[in-house]
Length: 381
Image 1: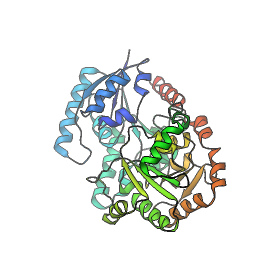
Image 2: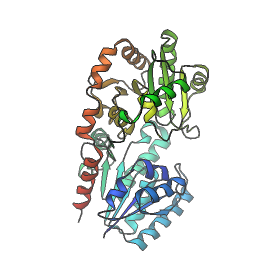
Image 3: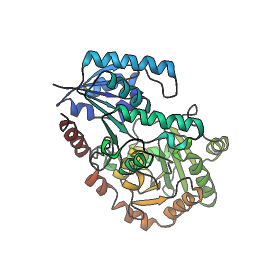
Image 4: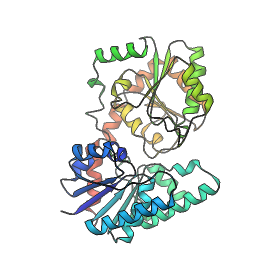
């Protein structure tokens, strides 16, 4: 059986972004997961039933540590002799593709699930642009996980069009529609959670799920909602996800509003987001950049209309006024108006619900995406 090595910088990405996919692929390949160490890597071994290997990588620019990690990856590839090395996340992509090229791995695939560098400028941007081009040059194929992202890569001349391939309709892992089904959260669970959070039946509940960082549009979201909640008594904003203050902090005044406004409920990381989605009415996701947003898939699958920014991925899942609203990027006022619209027009919200889950089932069902990836793997010779 040919070997397939999947690499992410941190183990939580291997566990969450590719959940179930490694187990599926292990029927066709000998799959090895490579990432930094941690509890999540142990979960990957157990849940996916694959071998794992620890190589520590950082998420920032650390030349000496990066060289060390590249050498370890090279040695590992020389020992294992994989048919395919498939990397995800920026640092794993750069180091993994370089090491795989040096080790003469025949098929070197890197999935692009967003370009953080688009929000940088100056010398750092120049360096990151060069790193991006270098990563792509080491790969045999680049897999953007949305058509919009493919176009951005072409526009920025990071590589030529022939090297790019989008799997299926986009997405890195599709959506497990059996799991993300509102029917799994009982009325009793919903009532209990609403009681704990102080949410009433008359509240319109907006939810954000993701990293609580600037690049996800959190400054705009919190400020827009804060103004909205001063006019509207019956609304709440749920913030579900981890802080990354060391990488991409919020503005101090945003942090103050989160603390001071009782209608903003920051609940941190939740292992199971479904109960929180089930008690919500609208996903607010004003991100600056995405590859292909899993959260929009998950919430749509659980029949939530979505307010999203007009960026690749988001505008491929959401059609304006059909299954949600699309607003300009970094536009606080447009975001506030969209939220106000969702409060004022419950009948329109209900009509959007009819087009949420059905669209996901048609285009992004997990088994379809996995089979499309497998088809692509099998086309390699």
